[in-house]
Amino acid sequence: MPILPPKPAPTEPGTPRAPRCSRRARVAVLTAVAVLAGGLAEGLVVSAGAATRVVRLTSSTGAAPTGAANGAKVTVSGTGVVTGTPDELTIQMGASTTASSATGALDENNTEVAALEGVFRSAGVKRADLQTSGLSLQANYDSSGAVSGYQASDVLTITLHNLRKAGDVIDAGAHAVGNDVQIDGITFSIANTSSLLASARTRAVQAAQAKAEAFASAAGTSLGPVLSITDEEQQTPPITEPTKFAASSSAGTSTPVPIQAGSQQLSIQVSVVYSLKSGRS
Image 1 (tube, rainbow, N blue to C red):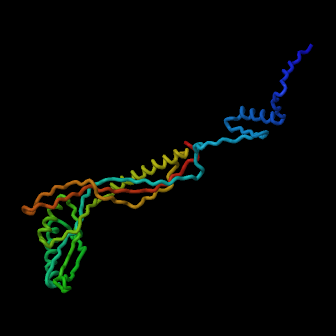
Image 2 (image 1 turned 45 degrees about the horizontal axis):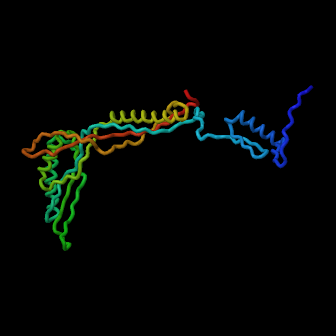
Image 3 (image 1 turned 120 degrees about the vertical axis):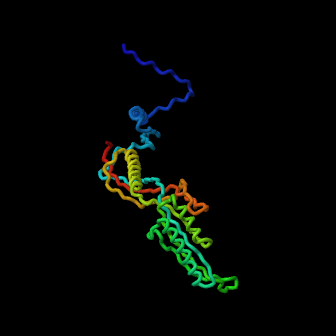
C-alpha cells in the first residue's frame, strides 16, 4: 500500500495564506542562484521582480603592461656635472684721469695706462693677453651746467695664467697707476676643459640610461639599442667653494691682492633615444 504524504494541517479561519510563487518567479530565482554559485567572482547578481541580470565588476588597478609594440622608443635626457679648479683669471683694470683740458686728461691717462701695461709685461704677461676693452673721454659739468674739466678712462682686459703670482702683479699695477687706478671686475676660468667635459658626457649618458631603464621596467619591457644621442649646450654654473692661493709679496711692504680662485662646475646635458624591445627579456 503506497505511503501518502501527510496532509497539511488545517488552518484556522481568518489566518492569511502565504502567497504562491508563480512558475516564472521560481525559474528566475533558480537562475539567479545558479549564476551566483558559478560566477560570483565575475559579477554581481541583481534581481528585480521576475527579471534577473548580472552586473560586471571592474577594478581600478589594471594589469601591468607586458611589453612594447614593434618600433616603440623612449627619449630621455641626462646631465653630467664635474668640478675643476680654475687655473687662469681675467681682470679688467685701467686708469681714470681728469684735467682742465681734454688733451691733458688723455695724455695723463696714456702715461698711467702705459705704466700699467709695463708692470704686466714685466711679469711675463703676453701681449695677446692684454686687450683694450674700454676707452672714453668726456666733459665734466658743474652745478650751473658749465664745463668744469674733462675725464679720460682707459680699461685693459688682462688674462693671467699664473694664479700664485696674480695677487702680486695686480698690486704692483695698482701702485703704478696710483689713485687713478680703476678695477671693474674679475673672472676665473679653466684653460683646458677637454678632459672634464669628456667625464661630464660619460656621466650624462649614464644618467640618461638609468632613467630610460626605469621607464622600460615600468612599461614591462627592456631597452634596445641606442638610436641617437644629442649633445646639448654646455652650461657653467657660478663659482663655488672658494680656495685661497697664497702669494708672496714682491712690491716692498705692500700687501698683495688676495686671490681666491675657488672651484668651477662644468655640466653637459645629452638627449638619448632608445628603442624598446617588444617583450620582457
